[in-house]
Image 1 (spheres, rainbow, N blue to C red):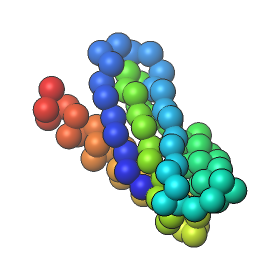
Image 2: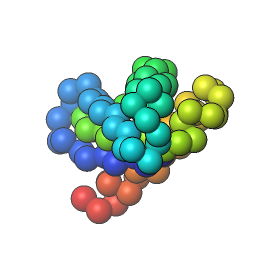
Image 3: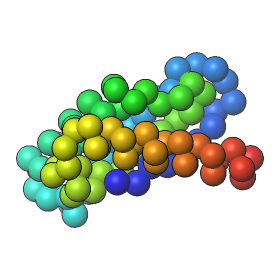
Image 4: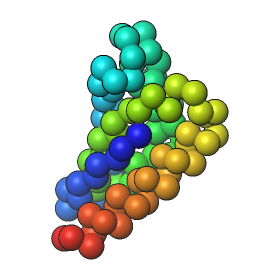
Length: 87
């Protein structure tokens, strides 16, 4: 998966969107990947003041849920650090 973040400059709760392209698979597989990533975002909440876009990959369908949450957490932290470094 790929994570893009953008600092909003306020302290409102973080917002997140999940997208999945055709590379993930047919409609059923894309929807399943998006549901799994939304559930992971419920566990690993996006930080306050940040807009987040998560782009699903085929691995979101096969990895176990705790590993999916760990990967998402790492990507969120790394993307946020990069966004702060460029600001």
